[in-house]
Length: 221
Image (tube, rainbow, N blue to C red; front, side):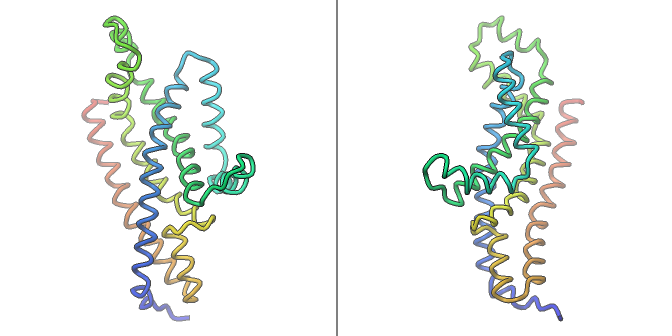
């Protein structure tokens, strides 16, 4: 069968709408996931054995199970437990945010451990409240050290977001599957979808490497 990419322009608007949904979903989950990841990272470095235990179970579960299974469980099983309906958007946001929180928590935990204890001792000596210590001293340094890995996690999340198409969310992958089914041209359509993901993800990956080199040079590591 000869390839025919001339059909793509007819569906470019639909593909762009799907891409817009993918980007919005990714950005929402990045914000929620990174916030959760920082809190979990703090819990994993806490002196409380209970906090460390609960946060460790959460991280190991969401890092150790397939994201697709997590998505199916939240979309199909969680509504039965809670007795409420969850839309595919809500299920996707919950799943990807929890997954992002789990993988970024390890990044934050490593960056938190790299902050010298003498800085926290100085905060205590100055009588700074715990909230001020975290927001003004710990958080800025932890984020700076974590930026390269966090950006890599964000790129990974952008690619993992294609899984939400499995629960009927109209992201780029879902639109691409529908177009390929309607046109009977899966090779052409899915090739273009893959190229769109690549065109966005590849420059971001290269940017991560550049930012990492600059941050390491700044920190003189």
